[in-house]
Image 1 (tube, rainbow, N blue to C red):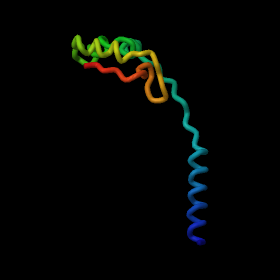
Image 2 (image 1 turned 180 degrees about the vertical axis):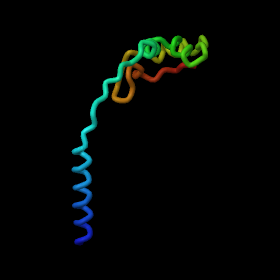
Image 3 (image 1 turned 90 degrees about the vertical axis):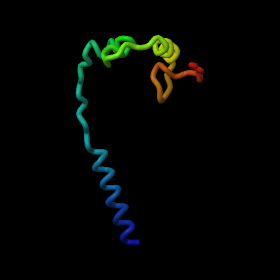
Image 4 (image 1 turned 30 degrees about the horizontal axis):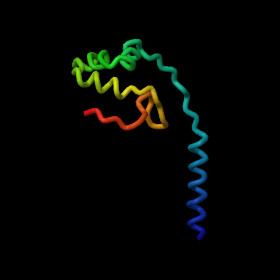
Length: 83
């Protein structure tokens, strides 16, 4: 039993040390073209080197529901059949 409590004490000590580590927040300025690409699917595709196909633009309109949940931002909502 002594070995078990020693390992538990080491585990508690390691967890406490990990919680004590403070990471500095770094302010990153997002370039304007990145902000535009977030809002404009066609512009995003051009930045990636290929223009979007018509059907991809149609899908994008369906995906952007404006609803969010804990996993998805602005694309949550009911299941939708795209085909």
